[in-house]
Length: 259
Image (tube, rainbow, N blue to C red; front, side, top):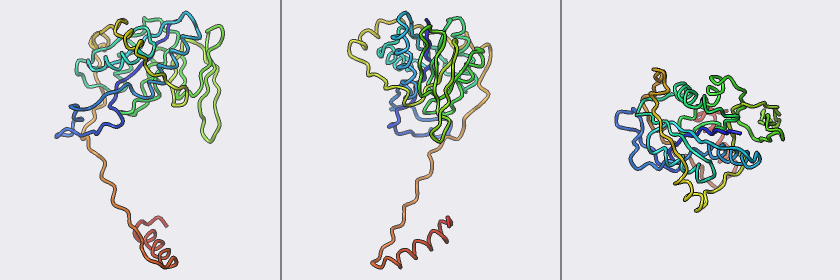
């Protein structure tokens, strides 16, 4: 059984982001990059599926610059078997181009199952996994919260939230793409032996130009800027509860205009 995991490297959630002077992007100097948190669930589920299957191989794939190697090594240290990095060569990317390049790079890998995170925490579009499944012409389930592979490895039962406390239970046949939600599992920490082994596991580097088929990004992001600072709140002071309540109601009605 061959399992693929599509991952992306993103800025750490605790990193302070600063737009460039011209608003064309973010200042990358000093930013700590990590394996996108939702992708950790995808890697963990792939490894757990491999352990249950017994004869499976997990390949983790990412598109990006040289620094993405660190995220791939993290996945290898967790237990993936090998990795592929598609060097973007600094080319502008959007969800569509990313999906096309990934599909062209992996379509001959013969994956029975592909896991992804439900979305990256930077662009936050949540589009790539669906596009990859469409281009591969395989089944797809988004935001999976439970994944149980069948004994004969022909498919799986996948559960996803339908809102308001209800769930959809989907009988999924392989090959398929599954995007993973928080709560699907608890990602393991990379052990010291795992980190040492990861350094010797195969990591292939290929070029985006070999898989883009001349395509380029159709979406361009401009005018990056920080959200405005939140205005300070008002504190109503006084000893008389009735007067304070009246003042609060007046502020909500006349100033905040919520009542």
